[in-house]
Image: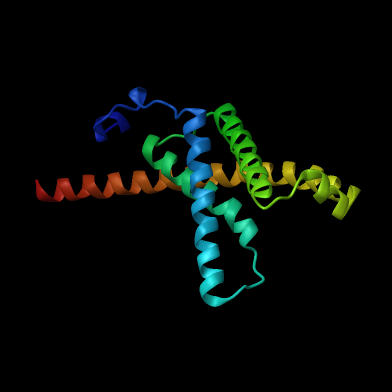
Amino acid sequence: MTTEQQTDVPLADVKEPKIWHVALLLSLLTILVEVIFYALDSYFGPTESSSSFLSTALPCVVAGMYFGQKTERLMSRQTRLLSILLWGGIELIVAAGIMRYFGLTLAEVTAEFGALFWWIVAILMPLILIISYFVFKWGEKMGIKNAVKAREKQLAKQQKSE
């Protein structure tokens, strides 16, 4: 049996997700992860953990698995890259809004940390986006594998019942 015969929807009809769908899902998942970490820190007390890395990697894995399982194919490099870049831009806007809410400005932060702040931003932002790209792709592959396994189990179950 071909892949198209095993699924209800032919693979040719499955559309690649829109860039802004992926970026918004990543942003919402990032906010959700941050809220969960905040709740855990409030309940158990502040801990020194790698929560900042997890708040970047976990949304990428979950979103990648979701889109991989939904479409059962990898999205194009361009869509994945532009989605990650848009997500990074949305997160910078959210961070600027939070800074503004607490009365901080970029000039004050730069004055506090000096030129080191800009070097950290210039090195970390591209590194985070590159890692996010590959973690998202890995999540997509895992989602595809899960969808194929689930379909194979369902097919085996149907064959046993016949």
